[in-house]
Length: 349
Image 1 (cartoon, rainbow, N blue to C red):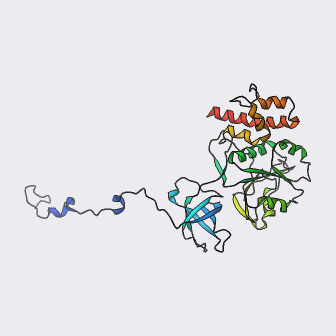
Image 2: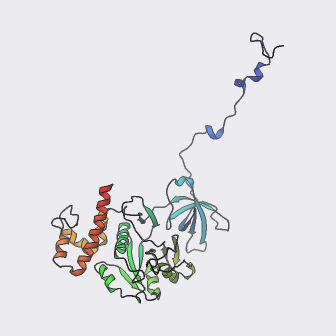
């Protein structure tokens, strides 16, 4: 008998090889329509993010109550590309007990009151979020070793004003150099200034200024920022470093942003930076950080750029007339340098 069947022969067993008769079981996951309705998480608990470390978030919940506790959380997939940063108020679900080994999920980011940002440089439109919901900025700068950088402080002030944050200045190492000349650059601005000699900080005065506020501490590497934070919050144990004797630069010691409680306030310690790009800032916001010059700008014609070639600029006229003294010249120079950089950035993009 041939191994091939006769096409005219009625093979009663053929049906057992016919795949069309096989019943395919439906895949419930593949056939179920996706819903755009997301859980409301009505029972979510609210908390404040105090640290971010490789996809894990430290969160304080029920602050200043008997149920106060720290949670470790991850971000829920439903947040999409929304980033969670130190200082964010968030809603959490899952295991919110705070017990060792527990893990909760961040399902919502509450509305932010402020957002401090920086870019890598002035031509970079990509924003790096530093902290959310801060209302004060503690700018730490050394009188010497490393030398104070007026332009960097100007940038901090611009970023603070752009975010709606009140600046405070702390100048360290005044035993090494007289800070008077440096401080004169900011004589026209209204903000509080603290000074310290040889790490002898006015702890009581600074602590009082931080009460009831969320204060972000910023500063060039090596200026003593982490040393100050450790003095304010001894249990913080933030890493500190020394200044290179050859380059005069500080070493990056604090590698993460962390929020530390101090009485009724919070201080947010940030990694030291050597640059603070303003690529995200609207040039119209810059003038507001130079309050002494902003008042004069009310006399400027509409559309005035306040740059050296601006016709009938009231600021330039007052400065050239000596109405603001020698400090007016320095402040105008700082303003124009920042405006020029941002004008070039806007042209490029």
